[in-house]
Image (cartoon, rainbow, N blue to C red; front, side, top):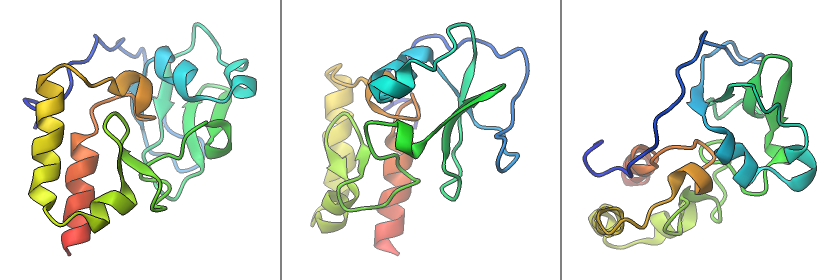
Length: 150
């Protein structure tokens, strides 16, 4: 799967693995640029410049980003967060406009992955600044497609 994913910049190495304060699960590291791009302006002011942030992947948890002593919830983001929200308008692929509803309505579901792979190959993906997870969304897309097909 990584072969088709967007190129990513080097991720900082965490000094520790930090668990979400709500559910205790260790999330994935996100870069500060992701928070800066997707948080509402009033929430952006609370970013701690030297802190390492983590994305909570649990759909049942309202926390999106966390670090020691600071959290950002879904309310703090300017975009809906997949997989925490599954409204028809929620993006699954933030770069290329594939929403949950559009995926459900697509007649040729394999063509979705082909479309995105072609866009990635052309260098048109910006997952670090468009996807709240700060990483390639192909895994999310694959999960969404499997969910729809079941």
